[in-house]
Length: 119
Image (cartoon, rainbow, N blue to C red; front, top):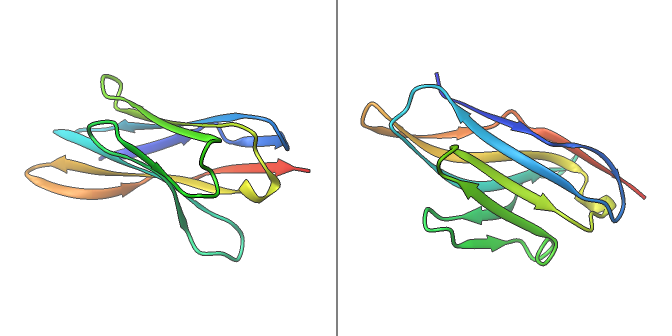
């Protein structure tokens, strides 16, 4: 059973910082992290940041310059450092990865971690 376990969410004041983690666990051959998404109440899930296997990153315009996505291949963990947080960043954040197991690649999602930014 493969799981992506997120952590690091919480309540923070505007201007503050949080660091999200997404750790893979279980039995698999390899993992390729895709990136982070978020979903605010009443809104659709949106892409926040992506990272390739080579480490190239891309960001939504709304978070450019404030968020940084990274990965630690040795630990099978992806991170997102979020600085200068704004109330509009309030959402449930999800990580996404493709996991190769038994010869097949599957898309996995974390359970989500709540980020709340107060004004």
